[in-house]
Image (cartoon, rainbow, N blue to C red; front, side, top):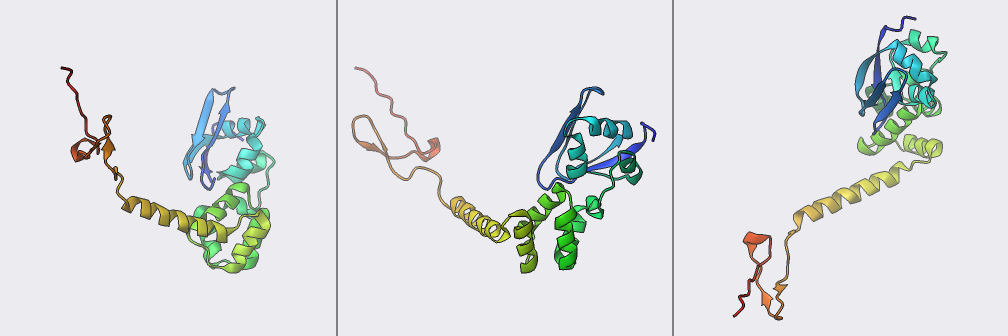
Length: 193
């Protein structure tokens, strides 16, 4: 395999960044969620030699070149190549058996995306929600409830007035009215006689 071969690499991480440093090449890379970059095969190969590099390749990035993966002695399951669109399709129209296979064989990045989408889509299939709970320990029902409560609280807080609701006491014990032009505070300057 030629070191200068260009390969498409995508961050599959459900809701986070993936980064690594290859000191030998003087390279530091950070992939944002869903970001796609074109890298040389040499960089991918050297990443695989680093501690944790193989895990990054297998679990959190999609190396879109089967020949390169074979050269790295990695024979991925079909779920390795799932994009976010594939996962959405699987969750909405896929069979339960397909979904269970995905939960059993998919990389961690795919599982994280499934959990995120199950809450945000939301996933209405009770059997698939139960499968997620049994396979990952993630309770979609509770996460959806928490999301709904949080959204409701944010709406209520946004509707409330944020200024002071009471008069500001002065040093002499008399309350002062708030001055709307100064953030709800009134400044009193005492002159010495």
